[in-house]
Length: 237
Image 1: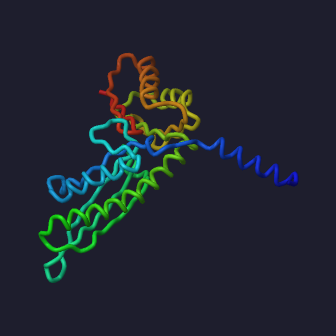
Image 2: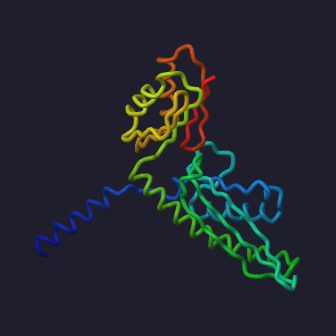
Image 3: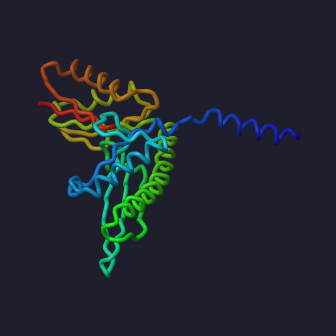
């Protein structure tokens, strides 16, 4: 084996060893139905099947969890044929980062094979097949997104409202101590937004450190903090 080939193989193996190892089990999601469909029996059944299908593929689909990575909005539409004797179901799933609908993680669409109207066993079989196909597609996308996030680091969003004068440099310095990258997105006299990127810190650590900095600088000001996935909202009273 020549020297150039040997060096190339060494470089490739080094990259593979350095690459972050992210398993699907590291991804936590919550599947939610659109508000108008939350009391719809078919939509509820599709959500139940979709939760189970994602869990089967290693994605942790849970309800009522605060420390989510992604929220998946599921839409279920029943279509009747022109003759009215058969129906099909269209499903759309869109995953966005918890607390930030503008940061997409993936999307998938599925459609069942037509089945006779009122035939519940045929409906259940068709729905399961469509859900399984969607889960395969979306699970792969979320795994890829998790690998990208592991290389880049988690991006936290911090929003402040009714903040006291002089808040901006205090927040920026506090974030800079914890994060590899800090960016001011929107700044006003009493409100502002920041992003903070880090491979190491957790949201609880970010919340505690920022709270300590604000409490030290503004001891007479009370505020509340609310966490939504990677979003931290600070509201001064």
